[in-house]
Every structure is written in C-alpha cells, then in structure tokens.
Length: 253
Length: 198
Image (cartoon, rainbow over the protein chains, first blue to last red):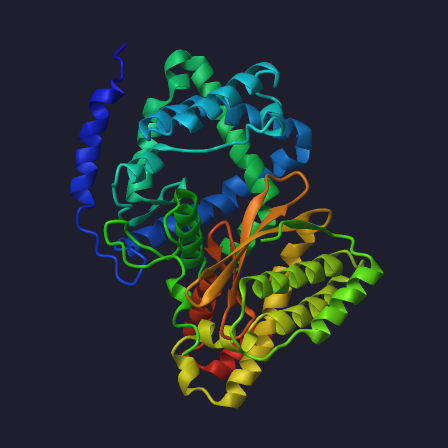
C-alpha cells in the first residue's frame, strides 16, 4: 500500500492554489465570480437535502434518543481533536495545542472514549481549528466563494483546507480501514444530529428566504470571518478594504 | 465596565422598575456614552427575557416584541437601510407603511427564534465605541448549547440599536439581502414589497 505523504503533497497543493487565487476580483465585499455554477450546486444540494438528508436526519433524530446522539457526536468531536492539534502547531499556537491535547486526553479517558465531554466543565472548552484557518494565518487570501457538492458553502481557501485536513488527520493514519469508516460513520451521525437539532433555523434560512443562496453565502462568510478574527464585511484579506464596522458608517445619511 | 448576568424570569417588580427607567430614558438624538449604550441593551435584554417568560400566546409575544423593537431600535432608519437606494425616491407615506410592515415581519421572524432562549440567559459583557457606534458584546447561554456571542450595535447619533450580530452574522446585512431579493421579485415596487411582508 502506498503511504500518502502529505508533507510532500501540501506545498504542491498550496502553490497550485495560490496561483489559482492570486487574482481576486472582489467588488464591494463579496467575491463570487463563480456565482452561476455555485447557484446550480446550491440547488442540487438543497434538492439532496429535501430528498435524502432531511428525511434521514429526521428519522435519526426521532428514533435515536437525544443522549445517545449527543454521545456519538461527542465521540466524533473527540476524534477530530488530534487533527486540530496539528493545525494549532502549524499556526504556532502552542497554548491551543496544549489545551486541545489535554482536552483529548480527558475526554478519551474520563469521558469514556469520547462519549462524554467532561473536559468542557474543567475549563477545557472546544477550540476548533482547521487547515483553512492555518492558511489564513500563513497569509493566504480566502479566494472566491464556492459551493461544494454535498458539503455546501466554502471558499477556495477553505476548500483546500478541507482536503488537507482529511490528508493530515493523525487518526486516519493511526487506524486501519474499518476504523476509519467508523470515524466517517460517526461524522455522518453528527451531521444528521446537527441537521435535526437546528432544523427550524436551517430551513428558515435556506427554504423560506427570498434568496436562500444569498442568505447562505452571507451567513457562511460573516460567520467564517468572525471565527477567523477577520473583520465582518471584509473581503479578501489581501485586499484589506473594509473594517468590521464600516457598514454602519453610512447608516445615517 | 459592568459585568452582570440577567436571568430570565424577571420579577414583576423588576419589570415595573425597568419600565419606569424606560419612561425616564431620553430618546432625543444626542451623543451617547458607553455606559448609556450598555444600559440601553441591558433594558432590551431585560424586556426580551420578560416577554419570553410571560407565558403569553405566541401572537401576543410578537406584539410585545414589536413594541420593544420600536422603543429601542431605530426602525425607520433600519427600514431605509434594508430597502437601499429605492428608499430615496419613495414618499414619506410609503416608507412609513413599509416600516410598519417591516417591524411586524421582524418581530414575527425573530420572535419565533427567541422561544429557544427560554430557560437561558444573556450576559452583557463589554461595550466598545468604534467610530459612530457602540458594540455592546453579550454572551447567550442557552440550555444544552455551547455559549455563543451576540452583539448589539448602538448608534451614537440616535441612541438606539441598529443591528444585532450573532457569531459575526449581521441581521442588518441579512435583511438587506432578503429585502433586496424580495424587492427584485416585485419589480422594485415599494408598495408591493410592503404588501408582501404582511
């Protein structure tokens, strides 16, 4: 079996990516040059949600009791921590790396293989990170907004981050093939649980909006900028145009 | 800078006290201070908490919530902002009708979300002045949920709030996109837009 050498692969991906997004044409904040393609993927994803994801999530949420769903989601979260620690280190955020390592140790042991989350009440709350954020810290611009098949809203930078995170994941390297598929199964269970828990919120945004695509795009980008600590309303970091509160400056005119 | 938590389930006396404070609160548009902005949002939070724990019917809660919005948020200017450039060519009567319909729509749309806050609490943390606004940062702590950040944006000019952000998601921007899309659907007619909100 060929070992996937990520360390060798990552720079190649990054260079290819930088070449692809070196020319951002962000006009007035939202950088969405692929809007037509994105809209068509959005429609496909919404159709998939109606036909499969929603009914499956509803069945899962109805049949499986809440504490068990929560427990399985916790296991999925715990299994994702080592990947987060890798990114903490790549971002030179050693405090977060230690915090998340301690969180992993507590939840994997006291939390019975991650079923429970005793770490949070001990002050070791979740501090998520991903390779998209690592790229952001390394100064890579976010690139254009993209809608990925099934996965949904992303940006060029975050889409690359997603691929690298899958390749970098230490859990994926430690475990064999059947365990890896359990991890994927847990991830799917977690997504179904999330879809079920926030059903009203999700549906009011995507189904009941006059333009569900525009709402999803705005929500994703605002929230992502917030999580990354970049100003709300700022487009590509390379452009550095808007500061977070600029949208209020022309409010009274 | 005060750091205080307001539990839901306000007593009748606390509610009456806050109502008295509201009556005494100046509504004229002069320069505000950080503590005034924070005091305003403390009242908003107190009002919302009282409404969702009132045990009233949903329809009655929406009416109360709309009253809170009108009192503390600058609804006429938020309305102008979400309509965008077409607001400039609209008559005062058209904008007044739109504002009335928009208030009710917002109260209904977000009022239904506030039900999820029952049994939780909102903490007002810090207030920061940024150019012409105050960012009043709060934490929402809901039952069975990880805490999340909400911010009220209070305008210095009007002394009222003009936006609410949830984990960085601006409701003002969101409604600009939504109302913009609705306006496109009715061919740019403000009157038809107002009718479609009802």
